[in-house]
Length: 111
Length: 111
Image (cartoon, rainbow over all chains, first blue to last red; front, side, top):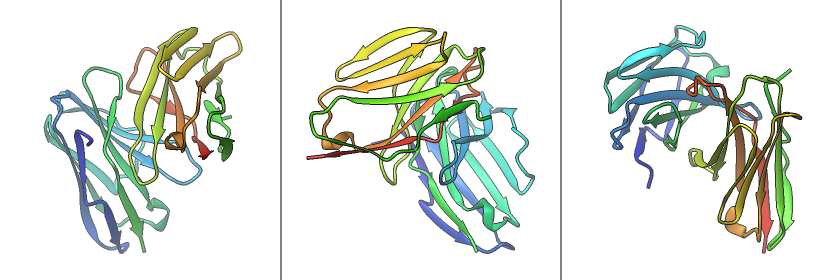
């Protein structure tokens, strides 16, 4: 079983809702990531946190807001999303620079 | 032009066949090359990674990189139905955290 746990596994939200995705890693890693996976598109890196500091943003719209309160937990706060934001959101962690472990993802549908 | 190109498939083979999965890339600064396997409704898992050119073998899997032609390959010997999954190639320069992924190739191994 994966050492990276994501909740919820599925989420349906309206465009005016606010919700949060949660990620927890049990591996003692020092870096955590949010990726977006859309059908027929490559995995897109959204955010990187290394030692709890954000090091990469990749020009993600401000309706996505990450939070990393400690090295084991990562959140993605969502508000006023668009239907095109529907995708699989993957959390990952690593010890050092090589991304090694992904969570199972949250399947998000924006209606 | 996408930085990492990958045929989406599906690639269908009979059990026991040798499978060849391929990617091309355009950024000559890439030094690290990775293959991930993603089963349906799961997150990607790291299969293998290589540095620069050459081959790396792990059991039935062989990763090959040809930097002169910017070509990445993953060979699977004696393919099994349990190998049926989507295979993602990825590349990075020395800033490992900025992995660039291909779209993934879906592999179907029939008994």
